[in-house]
Image 1 (cartoon, one colour):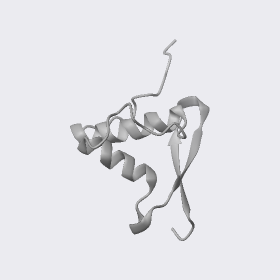
Image 2 (tube, helix red, strand yellow):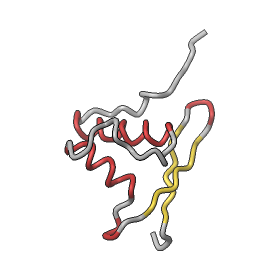
Image 3 (spheres, rainbow, N blue to C red):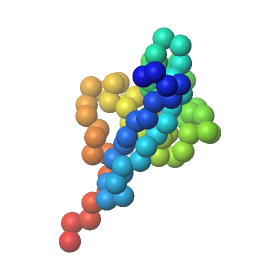
Image 4 (tube, one colour):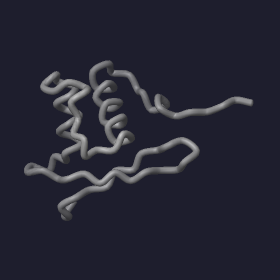
Length: 84
């Protein structure tokens, strides 16, 4: 992207989508991508995400890192659905 930020949309179940703006770093890697990579490689612990990220953003970054580590899609984890 040409802007200094990029927007990532994440689904929030029945609440629609949430836009997460992340800083673009040199080399085109976003802050979010860097955090996912560092979590998946073990460079940082899962509890060490920046406080500037919202709880939803932190959960999404952790979920993506777990997907990379396990090779399993976790797209439905974090969604809530009550079956009547």
